[in-house]
Length: 284
Image (cartoon, rainbow, N blue to C red):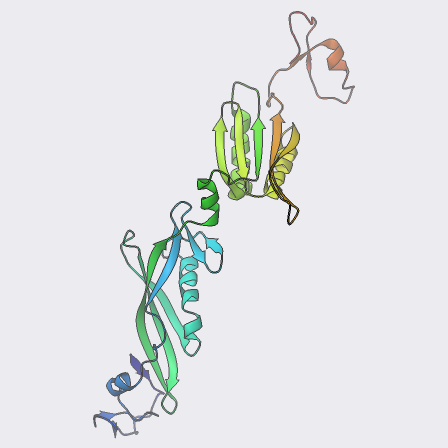
């Protein structure tokens, strides 16, 4: 704790502390810093130990009442979350500075050094520095609860392409990462001829289907299955399935078509290679 005083002129003399009698520069409290420390504690009422909930499965922190945030250690987002925990008890003081103190990453402890100011005793301004320790307590979030219960998804997008290679999926992977479409997915599973995307909301699955239709030539089908029905509130719980089949050709592929099929798109169709015989070169 230290005392913040206004600048004084060199001609101003010292006074005696009203408690211990030590000569000090004049101040509104007429007391030295040591005596003020014994009389006033401006950090009183601010908790020095706080609990922070953390989900080990998805590595997110709980921001009350029900928001889970992804925060790295000693990041600005984590500091903001920690300060919000003690914000209600700091309404009568002014926050000057806050920063992290190093702790062992596996210690389940986060320490924040806080500097505050407050006006006390006839207008004297005190500044105090103290440490708030945050204890990390494990708590599973709602999304991870549904995953563990094996009934977590409400919609699934089944992307399929009947080819021997995965060039199209490598291309889609880069586009999905670029546009961050994977952020809403609860789970992603790779199977033999495609990928399954699981979502907690049907709207997120529909957004993925719309993206695929705008990116690659494909066709889609939608189906849903009734899981439960509440007769009292007349609510229904469905699981939706979106089946997306991508055309089994890629860029620079040679497609062999019969003469009749090659002429059917018309003069404005895509450039194709015509096979003279249907028997030796079946259409793909």
